[in-house]
Length: 203
Image 1 (cartoon, rainbow, N blue to C red):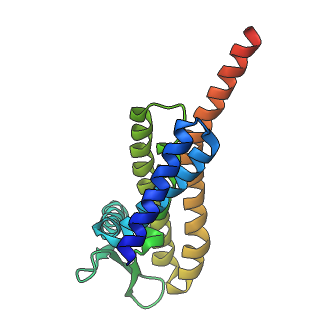
Image 2 (image 1 turned 45 degrees about the vertical axis):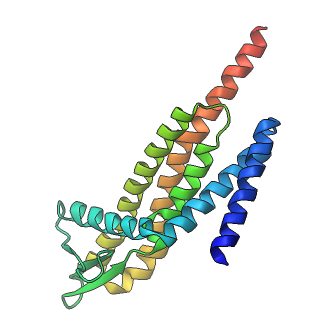
Image 3 (image 1 turned 180 degrees about the vertical axis):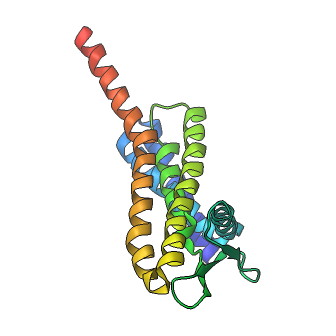
C-alpha cells in the first residue's frame, strides 16, 4: 500500500511539473518541482542506504578533522554513525554523539538540491553542477557544526551538550547554510535581475 501511494504521488507530481513547464507557468513549476524533489530525496534517502551512508561519512569526517586537533574522538565500532568524544572537563570519560537525520545533513541537502535543480532559466548542466557544489558545501558546513559541538563538549564537559548542540551548533550550521544559499542561489538571481534591468534601460 505504501509503495502504491508513493508511486501515485510521484506520478501526480511529475504530471503537474510537466503541465506547468509546458505552459510556461514558472512560479508553480518551481515551487511544486522543488518541494517535490526535496521530499523525494529526503524520504528515499531515509528509506535506503543513503541516510546511513551520510551518517557514516559525517562521523568519519568529524573524526578525521579532530585528528588534526588536540581533541580525541573515536568512531563507535558497533554504530559507525556515532562519534565517541573524550571529555576531560570532569572525570575522564567518553560521550557518544549519535548522527541522526538532523545531523546527517540529509534534510538540507534535499531542500537545496530541489531549489537548484528546478531553478528556471539555467541549463541542466549548470543546475546539476551547482547542486553537486551545494551538497559538498553542506557536508563541510555540517562537519564544522559538529566539530564545534565536539570541542565544546570536550573542554566544557557533558553538561554543555544541550547548549553546544541546540544553540551553538545550530547557529553555526544556520550561518553556513545561509551562506551556501546566498552564493549559489541568491547572488546569481540578483545578478540576472540586474543584468535584465540594465538591458531594459538601454533599450
